[in-house]
Image 1: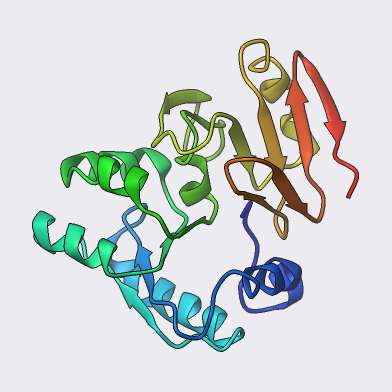
Image 2 (image 1 turned 90 degrees about the vertical axis):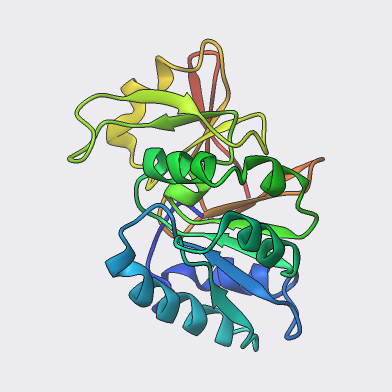
Length: 205
């Protein structure tokens, strides 16, 4: 998911699509490591309300203080992993610290990324310059997909993105939009923009 408000209609179509993949029995684990511990409770409530909309009440939050071995056990007992927004570099740092990258790559359930959580799924995680990052930078991601994404996409960032596409594929995902990927094909929810070979195109839905 590129971003957007969980609790109004902005993500309505995305949540509707999720209902095709998440059952009422599925166990959902929130991985909140992209943000400060003080924000965990707020995110937990928001994600709980989101999954309640599709009839799922089995949402749990993974605390960073949890022992690394217990973290692995918790992950493997869940059906859905939900990576929240925040700082992608902080998220990758904490995943490495807990040695969770191999566990996530072997996970067989549904993995959802929101904003920064979606950025790190790529081999190359592109962090565009904004108020938090004075310069665009590229860091290693988890490596679940072989393309990169630009979340909260707006056309004002086009020049910055296009310069990076001589060696990589990038999908621009605005707020309220999402990409579903199943190892074979990409399905787009709402507007998505594809950048490749120094060119941009809007994907026809």
